[in-house]
Length: 129
Image 1 (cartoon, rainbow, N blue to C red):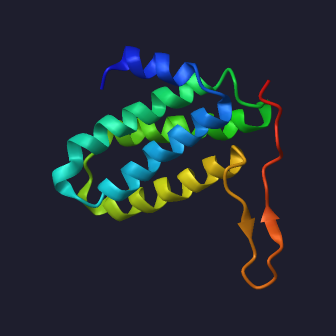
Image 2: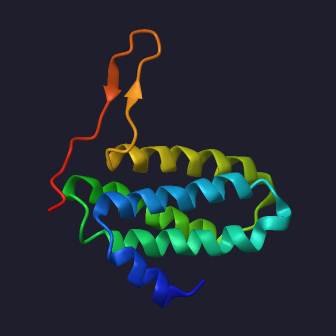
């Protein structure tokens, strides 16, 4: 991972795009965590996720900062301990859920109740100007 080019690319984005990229990184972790042959990729992606959170923090609305800080601490904890064979499915599930949450925070995912079609939770739209 070329941290300088990743930093440059990430910091030129809107906060919604930054969270979308972070969600993509977490989705990659989710899909690769169950595969022992992807341990090196997962480890690098956990570090990347922590960095993306760090770089997006100055731009994200204040109400999301506490949640992002908790995600960052979790990513760093997993990074220090990975691989853990017994926890592969747990990391996969957890990062998938976090990815969905980030998309929701960024306003890129709307959650509808399948029975009623009513929005269950929607992130507010924020002016990106």
